Image (tube, rainbow, N blue to C red; front, side, top):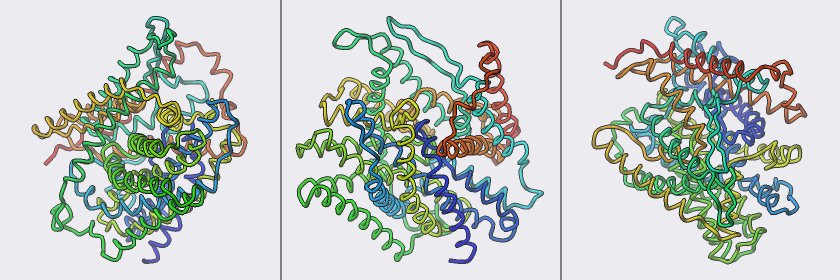
Length: 613
């Protein structure tokens, strides 16, 4: 390891720990965590401009990116699952327990080791698949090349990256200040119920959409449309007692539909993943960038063994040496073997920010609950053991989400993938210690699951635990409907393949599983860029930089607010009284204007793309 690599790792690890801790609160509120790789590259680029411009700048940025983004895998894994305990106890009217920081650190470390090992061993397999678009990896490659290129060959950063960052931070800030609406919403009335249908002004998700292919964006939106139709249909319906279904019940039903569709898509992706064969002399790796040395492979295997040993020892310490400890450890290993590789594929299909981590964790939750039920462990107190195990599994999958994009960036930039392994694991391990403490602070300040800290992903998993483990009332009808929809999506993918068109079933399942407004925002970004480029056009560097700028600007704002809130700042103080007095029509017009400005910037930087040669 040379001096520049060590310097890049040190810088990246510091950034990783800060980002991972600071974005805990923002992630708990939004239910989604941003892919921070572009943000890390910008930090390194800005802080070390001369070093980047000199020889070796590309590799330096690559290594800093891998280390700097690694911690967000732990943030996502913890905030999506750990609050299940507090939310479930709160919903049952019981005394809410504190965050078990020690257990979360132990299981986060274990999950990081397991995910790191499995992803490293399967790197060549998923990075050799030409059907995976890897949107964030291509965005990062463009940014790195722009930073290291000759000044005369660089894209116009002022009108692309910097303008995108400005819009990415300013737009959500104006929403918080009350000058703009968060969405252009309409209410659908059906019977005694109503449903709000929104066109969200979410620049981060719009930026993600601008990185996706048209087919992927359309499929995500199609899934969102199915979800929306289901929500409208269920609104106003009554439950078994004759009472109208409330918004929470409608949302939960569609979650189960999405879970059924996701389950089928997961199984199909597993079949494709394990049936794919990559020869050692594959033309996809003619430069040997994906070759993992035998000695490194042994270390990766040892990482998996160590992670599983940590889980087993933790279980034995909690439950004793018995059937429960062996069974749950085996279930975690089985899920990790399948879901980690699948998580990498999902990230390369959709992007790590919008990747449906909850889909793979949904399946893992089912497996863990089924194992616990088979062993007669179905009380609410058993959730105190199951939840940390789920945290470990989720951290492993999120590690695959992050590292797959980072490793793909290394490959695109001509850097051997195994060069980033040490940076990745170091960033993960330090974040595994820092993030649980940040979660505890957040709980003490706001209470997990409260209106101030909703934790939507964990709320959904708490419902799954309640339905399967405690109440034992699984809603089979929506699950079966979702499974049938998932089968239809798989058939569409198979048909598309015969026509040479990539139509991933997983992207369609994502649309059903994610909130409908996320699918709508993704399509907006995709269409802005697509119509500007025209049919058969190649994506320009400027359009990627605008999208990366939108994501980065929004992430920067979340970072600043996350730090401020952690130290006592009241986010409500951002509201401006004068904006509150503006009429609804004025705010609506201003919001439409914001949409047009964001779309116009994406459109302008995509226009005139060179045709494929």
